[in-house]
Image 1: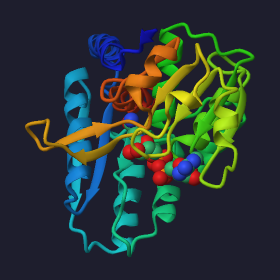
Image 2: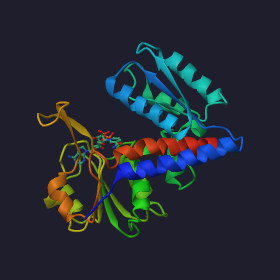
Image 3: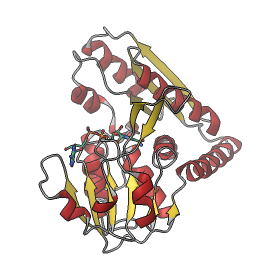
Length: 291
Ligand code: NAD
């Protein structure tokens, strides 16, 4: 069993990007600039945005954080997005989700210029991904693709069962694994909350991507010997065994599933660290696209 070390690969990518940014600066090319919009002060969103800004600094990007009160109107927010769309110094930007209930998230996603949509959420980028055209890929599936690639995991002709069909993880993951490329060329089964025979399907899988958000859902009796298991889930539950009083759980019951696997990602330290690096790579690409 090989433990896929997302922390190590994310660090490698960080160093590669930092090197390219330094070279760009030395050649007088533009320094990539990522902006983030944060509405309100939700604790988890603050943490995620903070980590993104920190990573920008570490690779030598410029970054800017635009904070707005939770009572900002939809119209005002759309105006701020338009300003970033028109600001030539900004290569890419994200609007941290979730947004307050009075703001239509889909409208916000569609207001972002696809050329600056480094989260890869705009329908233009989703459509290009579907057609295997160059596009910004959503961060988590892109991170998983990079892990498969860097560990040289064979995917061609393999049966992959993806558990979950969300717009940000399950659905794009299924599309990417089915594409005619490497990693890809899988036979993909997309499963979701209405799937009736999940265990029957996962037992046939050469690879399982678990992205349903239910702690330790995937148990050893659901996994074929030698399968590749990618655990996307992050559930924070109270625990008396940690200092913080909380523990993170993946969607996979790691201790019993790991011995059956050829490769497996841990939680934490697997898929999680890769997500921000995907955003960083997309921003670098957005900047390169303007060279
Ligand atoms: P979501 O709630 O939007 O989607 C969950 C999906 O799972 C749905 O499509 C649903 O149909 C499916 N599902 C629910 N119960 C099921 C069941 N019993 N059997 C089969 N399918 C079932 O969640 P999401 O945004 O896709 O996130 C999924 C998990 O991944 C969460 O734990 C989230 O915290 C985590 N996540 C991690 C990262 C990361 O960087 N590691 C990034 C994004 C999300």
